Length: 92
Image (cartoon, rainbow, N blue to C red):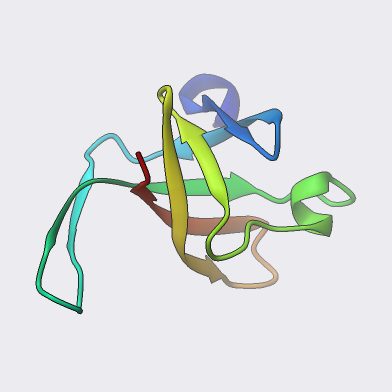
């Protein structure tokens, strides 16, 4: 699935292939009711023994997606599934 639908993102200075939801999310921030324009859901594969399994994405980390910087704002992990889902919000 990654080889066919995956997209290259930059995470911790390394290129990583992940699944990115095609439709940007619009999330309403709880404080102030501001509309956030560019957010994406990213699905990471935490391969056994790989760097993402050893050190998964953390809240507040930066990710480069389509040439723009985003911040991880939510993380969902459901072991024993090897997938980690995050929502990232535009930083720049």
